[in-house]
Length: 395
Image (tube, rainbow, N blue to C red):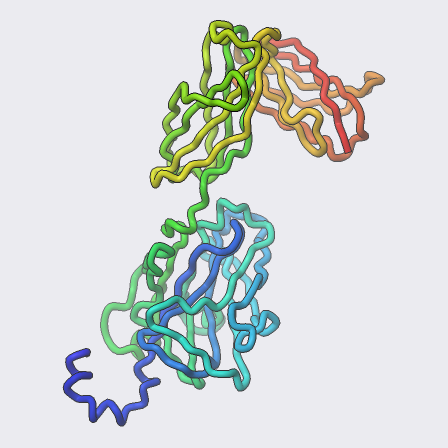
């Protein structure tokens, strides 16, 4: 094509350059964990009025209820104001589908480069867990009728300039092309008439994958040992953890490595032990977990403190005092069924939870939102334990 352009310049001068415009679209990381940016890029640079744009974002239908999509921001408010975007929603084919469309009236011309992303819109989802954001994908759903509302289309001056042969592109370091059943032959018109389904998963985008997040980290004294447990999300690209220990709360040393499970799951739980605390010669021990991704990115947990002189308790609550919820950490010496009972200062029963204890560390969440502030006694019975601790609810 370049050779033809060079040798037939005089002929091409007579051709409207708009006829050569073919645009593709991409999805990439947004400004927060619940949002993504949709951008496009043409094959040639142009300065023309963009007349319409249609694109489809999809979220796995396993997320229930269906999240609400909102237009968080637009990058060209003079062309595509936030209020101009229309959103259609349905659920089919295992996905929640969101058709986003905009039509402009006498818009100003835009400089659209072939060498850079032309960011159009940032969308956010209400009710979407952050770890699912990395599974948002763009789609072109083949078919006529209602399905035409769920396709990718791009128009300049009222003419369709969609690249039907390859609708999605890889923005360097931000996204990766991931078509399914692409149209591989024929003319663009045949591609449009015959139709095909194509998708781009943002879950294959390195930049969209979120760093590992510590959902919880607990340190419980068990005899002369420390039992450490933590829960994380966005664990897919995790390499390993380092258990950091300190006797002054300031200077930490790496004392143990825990390799990532690498089971493909986003949410995982880990636990380990640090033995013979009394040999360290300190009355208090501080712990922190340092996590490292396969690309070298690191995330640290909160710091937890243990008293070496104090008796090891089988039941601990974090946080305590607490406002809305507290999590009980139960170090059970054996398997068994039991109960967790919360009573107020007058001995009245507030909560009663039937519990199944597994030998080792167990986690149970207590909801405190709807109870008055004050002290409450939490009794844990079963799994070889009969212990009561105090939890304070604050406003």
